[in-house]
Image 1 (cartoon, rainbow, N blue to C red):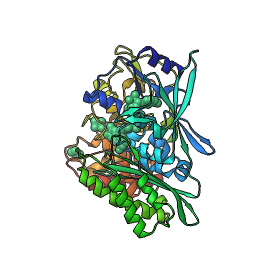
Image 2: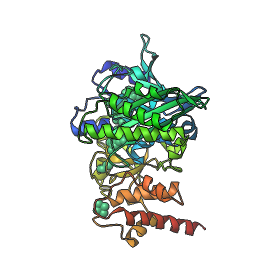
Image 3: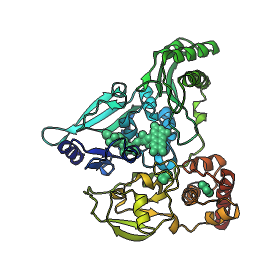
Image 4: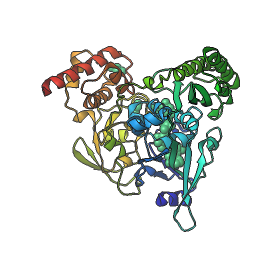
Length: 459
Ligand SMILES: Cc1cc2nc3c(=O)[nH]c(=O)nc-3n(C[C@H](O)[C@H](O)[C@H](O)COP(=O)(O)OP(=O)(O)OC[C@H]3O[C@@H](n4cnc5c(N)ncnc54)[C@H](O)[C@@H]3O)c2cc1C
Ligand code: FES
Ligand code: FES
């Protein structure tokens, strides 16, 4: 960490790279110019560690969304955070994207922020001290955001951890999102709610909402619940007061009126769920991550400096490939090696046509730099030999074929994780892959059939 902070101090233009799912897109879209130096912090020792510290969870700065999705104890004690992590993009994206990256980007639409705010999380910030060591300070997340996409973080600082208090058994909490589709959707509105109940009445309540103001905001209007048993009249009244307390804008995702109207319904439904203590039932049964915990925490052991001429060594489908240009995306680099099976549909992490496995975890290879794959194993569709390929043909799950390599990679990885997948697991597992011409029914059928065939051959 001291090395990373040293680079940030010596080069004020350097940018931190974690999962890259915001940063690489920022460069790709030209929202900002790629600086000369990008510091990959994911190789910092213990940067993917989740620690139980009795009253709270300590999530190191490199913890990914799927690490939280896989963590049953965090779900049991900090459900709003787990729910927010599960709603970020798609499984491939969640295998790379970090919670600290979500917080540092500081968009009011970023989902984990309302969850962390309502749970009362604290951000741990690291900087270099005068002796070249690492100095840590803590700031409540409710004070961390200073304006639209602005934070209290200085250019020479980084988020080293996020501390998330556990909910006690007198607390109930949930997190909800309204998007334009069920996956890969930036929030129209998102909200985290936590209440404390004593003797059947609400002793305290907090609400954080996103996509309704320049930053995610805490709203006092929820205090109308305090002292009540959350009866139906209170629910309706509080929901109206919350809607009156926000002044959302109209943008490409929704009009201000739509947002205000949706908030009423969203809050009413959430409060009924909390009243009925039914929030845990919102969690799907064993959502697939297209990865294992080991694959998620795998990190490059040593720090290296890469430039355009550096030769990287990547095992592609079991064969070691040495080539330069590690600053390219992994997708472009692999295609330059003549392996053109994986496609570029969007180059923005949206379509899944570029889905590869990196150390066995599914990723969007258009949002990973090749330097981040140095010394690792990459699997592409050229290396796939799996019953799912024949199932796609037999079930007529292919038309133009452009999306299919990505579906095959996700589908095969899904069956490895869920040998007898439910329809919900198939839908969640394939939610990062878009098809514009075949339609999804034959694709889902092909995954079911391939899973049946594999189970049959294992009997
Ligand atoms: C297709 C797609 C769908 C998406 N869907 C969602 C969604 O549904 N909900 C949502 O909230 N977001 C979504 N995102 C945005 C993004 O995936 C998340 O914000 C993600 O958590 C960012 O984490 P990262 O590790 O990829 O960050 P990076 O891209 O690596 O970094 C993001 C920013 O944070 C800084 N940074 C990273 N780590 C640190 C650190 N430790 N300390 C200080 N600064 C740091 C970087 O310098 C950069 O400015 C989506 C993105 C894509 C491409
Ligand atoms: S997700 Fe990578 S090309 Fe579309
Ligand atoms: S088969 Fe054409 S986009 Fe899916």
